[in-house]
Image (cartoon, rainbow, N blue to C red; front, side, top):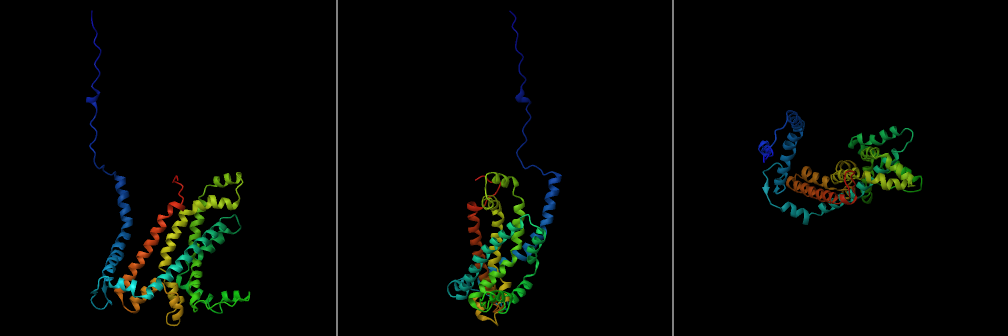
Length: 325
């Protein structure tokens, strides 16, 4: 009986092409061109940082450990400047307290005012484009000019006290009475709420309209829609404004330096003494450059601590649309 043999299967394994060796793939010509353009455009910032920022930062660390007046060679003192600041300089603690007081009130106040203005300007009202422009204009005015304006506004016979006089209230001497100097500076800080307002308003425009329509169908009121839809979608912008506001508040300088003159108003200046004016006096009035460098690094640590705390709390209140919680 003839037996038929089945055709043998082709050795597919032998015909398999060898897999490419693992290794770093070469960039395409387009990717190389994009990478070159990226480094070309960012190079001015990198060069500026290395030349004008990184070098002085490293030098300030060294000078903070020395006694240096910028005229004679620095003398190594180790951590003596830091020890004196933390244990034997009451002005430092006064300046730190005034800075914390200013930041604790001005930053939340600016966030609330910015959110309130953005919510108002998001309404369908007449001439809203004009109002948006007027809200943002104060941020374009130089800070020195703004301080000079508020010096006249907060004068004993200025518009604010005249307005209070209409209600029979005798207005305080804002820039000379110690208890009222910090509230005057906080009042001035609200002048720049327009920048935060513009960012919040842009974020409001990006919220899907379908969410509000669904809420209206469910019978949600306007206030309920704001708390459940608008506010959660604005938390990333609020967080950004919080970080930038904290950094700016801890570095407040021009307002104090211009509004509260040290020579003519020592009592008011002491009440408004903040960290950066204190640093400026030590560096450029008394030529304690090493001491001022130590102040700058302590201020940096304070800002860093509060920034880290803000970042650690983001998971509890900051909502991102791409995240599923």
